Image (cartoon, rainbow over all chains, first blue to last red):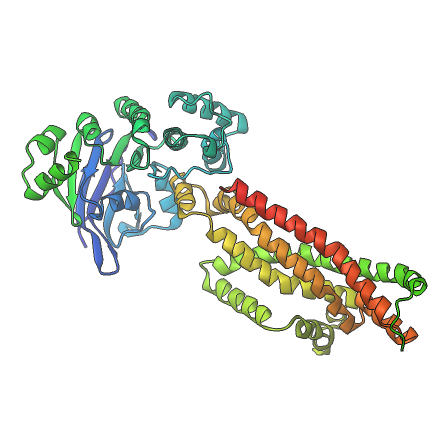
Length: 271
Length: 226
């Protein structure tokens, strides 16, 4: 097992963007190795865009950080805390569910298919977790939800059920719902892929605003290459379980080094 | 033995027949309450990640669903009091035996209805709950069950109509429900046409509206979840 540095207090405030550090992370589904000893460091406040062919496992990177899939080997650190391990008598041991829950409160994910709660209004969707998890009062949560829905341009849709909203509006509610938990790391899994083309822009505008605020670290899987080149601090080309190459967007998009990256970009940009 | 319909006799026995039907209905209603609650716990127990809970629950459901209701009634009414357990614990009136038996029997069917409802909730709902760091209890209560239960209602309704039609089996342990009353008239007066026809009509009078209600429920749930 690889060596892991002892947990160092960084003096960072409890909130604010957190780093993500993945070390030798392995995830396999049966015979199929999806993450093959993946190393990835993301700085606090950094916007990292992950691109790559479908089936390359790029979504799995987000899913293991969100704990939707558990890793087989390796370590993941969020800020100064290990996600899947905790320290006991100077040794790193497998974390309890309680520890995982605690660290997970720093992370939130937005999904391709929104996954809004269909039986609740937009405002209720945003209020649920703050009330149930963070113990906010009804009034506090309602107020905050209204502010967040305003921020994503849906201040007039508070009482609408998801079924009464367009795809772009649903996705903006989903983003507001995640923001309500004040995550230090936000994960975006192809959040515009299920949208009609004319609705993509309104969601990208919200993401742009979030990226500019620097309040959180953002990791996103996307096929929006234009958006990636505009917003990303760093682009990762992911293929066959590993990072094929990475760098600032201008380098990856204008001057890719790897043949597979060139072919991938050619295929994506030509359609 | 006469076979001609005698109106005068029919009206004479009607009050007793209705009273018997009220007992049949009462047993069914209490049985429904038990089945609704027990079924939910069985469904959750079966889904549990704790093997010591999920395995016995699955066996229990399988056992109850694979054996006839009448045998379960006899087990509760005759076999249970024959055990060494204290009498006050094992010896129940026929009325109690009957609603407990119906509740357990249909609770197992109800658990399957709940299970189908729970499984119809998309995985994304669980994932969104994890992403919001909801506790498992909150996820069940606020996210999964409010979506699963409405979808379980139509099949539950069908089971409860079936339960009502099984309730006359109580006459096997001398519960004075509608069938028992009809048979009492048969043996006392040697008449068969009126008592059993009235019993059938009384069932019809309850079952048909109940089934119509379930169909309306089905349409409404289909409409709301579309």
